[in-house]
Image (cartoon, rainbow, N blue to C red; front, side):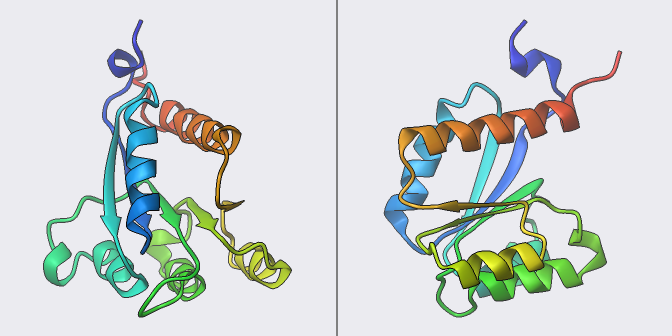
Length: 148
């Protein structure tokens, strides 16, 4: 049975990334992930918060099931975005996976302190992408698999 037939809907992913090349690469990887995803992309931290709050240009934005968040962003840093997400009761349990170039112990410590779900350092080799896709797939199956 195909995965598309056992689940109710696509996994909504918000990707917050200012590097167009990284955004394109993730989009291509998810196309071959083997389960339905819907990827929304914003290029900075301020837009991420507008997207989550369904404000301004993002009034009709889908509610993400998971956020993939870079730390080094224009307008508002990824750590600031993570703090804002965790302050909002609506998003306290929203999975937030940090995808960043920073291997700084301080950044990792702050991300952990503010309950990032996972911390992945870019550039990711194929194994890291495989691990990320497997984690997203497992989450999708647990969350959206139809009950008999």
